[in-house]
Image (cartoon, rainbow over all chains, first blue to last red; front, top):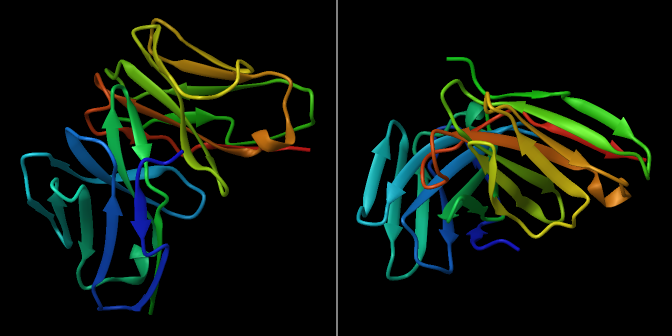
Length: 109
Length: 113
């Protein structure tokens, strides 16, 4: 079973717009990670935010973490067609990552 | 550094057969994890190996097994294949623990007929 839930499940936007995806989780965490998966391929790590951080930036990505609400959000600014992919949040528990259900992002040119 | 490699990339088997998938981690990484991805169940953790020892195991039947060699390469085996085993099997490596970033391979897509 998945620890987290992500919403929306699917998001369709135009190039240049911003995309926001949300993730909720259930247990205490050390860090939270976001991954991207292009259709049927391996996952690519995007960003890791630690439990004592509230916000982190990497290029066009901005991640926030609210441990009191057990939630995180991923913002992609100025989206491009190449950003079309599935995005997953993941939380480590012991030596395993538990993934959310993912958000399918489609960026239309 | 070369990334995580998985072989084969695609595989077709029939029910009742067994299959072995291989994963070569990034050089220097000692932890290798395996995940199963299906449309219905999403990404599910199978097991993790560190220095040739299984350190954690997910909730999968005993038909799923794995091992890690002294060079950190890992294999997973599925015996008595069932239709429901059709999935994308992903391998990930990291230097030490899953608390760190994991680096994923391209996956092996298994189809069971």
